[in-house]
Length: 113
Picture 1 (tube, helix red, strand yellow):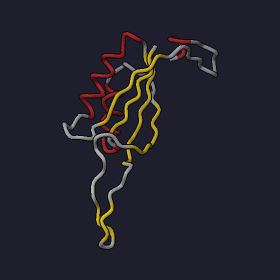
Picture 2 (picture 1 turned 180 degrees about the vertical axis):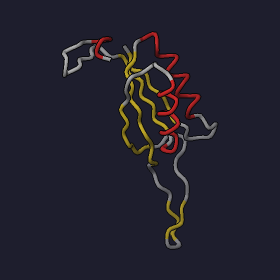
Picture 3 (picture 1 turned 135 degrees about the horizontal axis):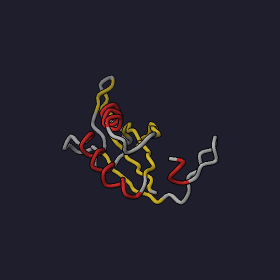
């Protein structure tokens, strides 16, 4: 099993939720509001005549755990749903998952997904 973490633009959250609802790749996801920056260092704003360049930008982090054979399909789906072609589209991270347990039933691993 793998955990897919995608850090994306906040305005693309509904797009990814809609794309996931049309597919049967994942049954659930976790969404967190996060701050950060990469190549997109921020943009200058003027507040009361003062130039302000924020060092951290608001992003959304989506976490989904899937079977190994579903990883590439999920990555493709995320990319298609959120890509704008501009700096700041985000990143996808793939991490190994050793064990999953559904607390309510005690099911483990693939059955718990």
